[in-house]
Picture 1 (cartoon, rainbow, N blue to C red):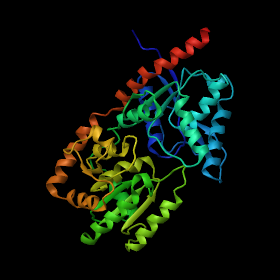
Picture 2: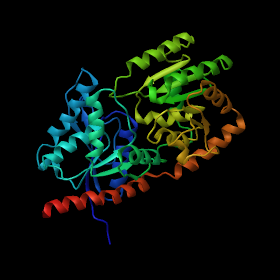
Picture 3: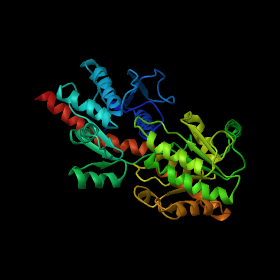
Picture 4: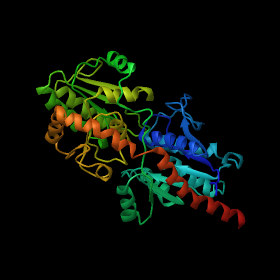
Length: 393
């Protein structure tokens, strides 16, 4: 029997290139490829739309710029979503799927107003907030969800242990048509644009953020640079709704203390967010992705690097240990700067590099967005059944 075509509203927190936003767009595209009508929504205060074009439908949600605190920003984005879905006509979807606490809180309120009958929530990872309002929003968007999903067993187990809630694991995917090891003309163009030399070049994705372990990456790179004077650290990304100013100040102090200059052509190249089209080249340019993250939902950039034939260095922690082995990557103690530096040196060995470069694309092929989308369709059934039950009541 042919599968019913679903109209699916996927809600994410931003139009910027963060992991959860990449997941939302890629999921929307895969669901569209399966024959469903998936529409990815996000607050768009700049009016620029999503950071990349998508094969699925997208709806930038009208949002006002906010210059206040994190609490004011999160509250404003929740309100933006509530205004957007304030009428029954705007809520004409079979499934609502929140990718974060902002959209989860908006859908909770809309569910209380009986505009939305139920919603699915993906918990990419769990945070801890000292501020009671942020902590409330964080937990509310989990407890009130009709169906919970996780991208790894780590957070599935954590939800069961700490919240007493069950979730399905849907995994993550990577687009191997976009990310691959074949050299392209854009690679040399980006080298020239950012002043990337002969290397070795180490890539860090996520900017100067504490859970990305940026400070230890800087300290490890300083040790490597002492032995490899031409080495460069390429720090990509960093768009975030949260305030990382204090941690970023510590990173700048560490760079100054180590005598590492920052800028195009310098020891450390901090690009900030870049167009999605640039990422495949940046992975190929790098000799290794250095990603000893302290807290990660899945680590989507690891799959992207591996699909590009770029060796990876990751934390010897879940979720990485769920889908990688010591044959696929270099595991390190993420709290040991010397271990990170040792892995950065080891990954440059010709034999090690050839092995990891060859292993990466094979690992990436195991993680398709189509398979990920199929798991979502099965999970959506619970919400569509709930909607029908309420309509019949």
